Image 1 (cartoon, helix red, strand yellow):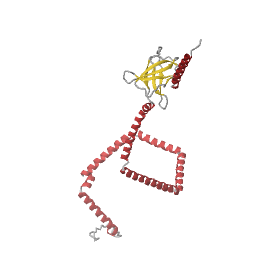
Image 2 (tube, helix red, strand yellow):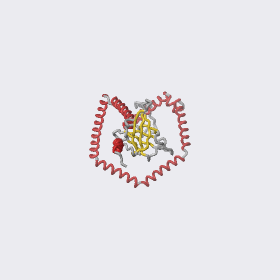
Image 3 (cartoon, helix red, strand yellow):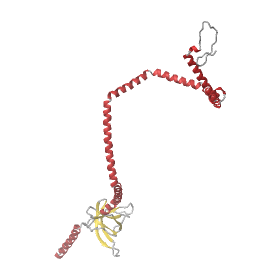
Length: 331
């Protein structure tokens, strides 16, 4: 059977149109021969997601964005149609999340599979959400750090204000004076150390002798340890003897003696007895004083004029002669 020329031309034209359509979609990243399942996701915004954007599952590209358009209800929401390979089944409640695929901000869709034994059918509407942009994530991550930095700046500002109040002119003057005093103290300490070193150097021989004497004393103490022990034992024995003696009765006798002595002194003070009269009676005192004076005169005259009182006579034995104070014969 002979095919008409017009049919050949029409067939070739259809093939050319199909090839052109396939090439057009292929150039856009769509392979209409590869993708067989379509799903719809509703978003309030898509943050720059474009048609032909990648659809990823666990980081692997399993589809692409086929079409994006606004919903006819004038709500401003967007309907995104995606194409997936037939071999992928999506469990119920799978989430299609728009995220930034690279640092340049290229948007793509990531499928977060749910745990379910039931699966979506082609054409179903999936749950959609948007992951925060890199800038938003950085802002979220940096927000606590920003707050801490602000608090730190406020604290530093408060500390600086306190430091400014502390380190005022009066404080600086006082600090300078204190530092000068410290320097002077260190200088005095150096001079004292030098003087002490000089003294120790000059007195080195004397110090050596002192140390030698101390060592000699220590040696003597060690060598006389037994004697010292005996002395301490003797002191201990004396102490024990005193402790065992009847000190109480001795003290009582002493108290009685002192009491009697007080009575005697009171009698003397009252003029009782010979001693009391001697102490209190002026007449007896003066008489005794006069008698002592006369006796002193008599003894002095006997020393100076013994002949007045002693006479030796060969012929007048037994004769009594009485003379007066001037040595004249009375009888």
